[in-house]
Length: 117
Image (cartoon, rainbow, N blue to C red; front, side):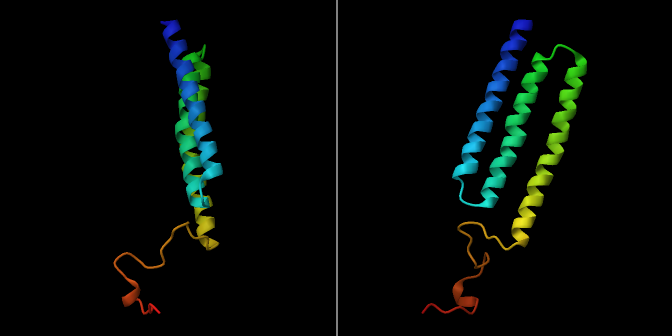
């Protein structure tokens, strides 16, 4: 049983590490701040959660397990809040998403007062 937990824990840590690497590549390659915020949020929720679960499988005592669970709960609540705060500041600064269309859904250029000249 201990060997199975070690294999599962190691696999979860490796999977979390791969998620973090993919998220870091996304931070470098994505076009705008909103897409980058999304990539960072996915890394926090998926990658770090997998790593924490892997460490829980490998933890030798219940005290360490409780501490890891508390860290996971803290990250679960603070990551979306920080991502939302960064996105709100970007929106307040007037940063538009790449590929953003000025016409609203249901409106066309002809009924917004714009001319096609």
